[in-house]
Image (cartoon, rainbow, N blue to C red; front, top):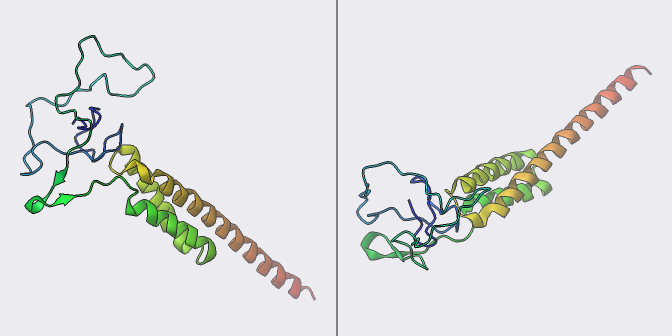
Length: 172
């Protein structure tokens, strides 16, 4: 599937463009009919990033559906839906859970924040979530990981001092 904003080639399962992060619309999206040319999608050499970026040949024109701005998206009864260019709720929730876990419950909130952050980072990498939430997801993952490690180390030290106190009391 080609992006209508930048013309980059994306997988048919992607919801957001891997190049410009704009939402992708499926062909014939108003009626739910997928338009297919009959052949599987071939890689498009001029839009795939890589170490050796190829130059387009002379006379190259972008994909026919290419437009400078993405078209308005309409849903049920021609109501216009806003395009999602901000961070997703999962990435924000991951960050909030992990930051709150610093001051409250430790691993009870940091582990879910860490899991949400990692799943959102994977979704962004696969093009299924907007790129704008990447920083929030990374903060949620790494802060959650740090709080979980520190909580486990604190629990081990606490357990060590309890064992040390009971053994020293038995010698007296």
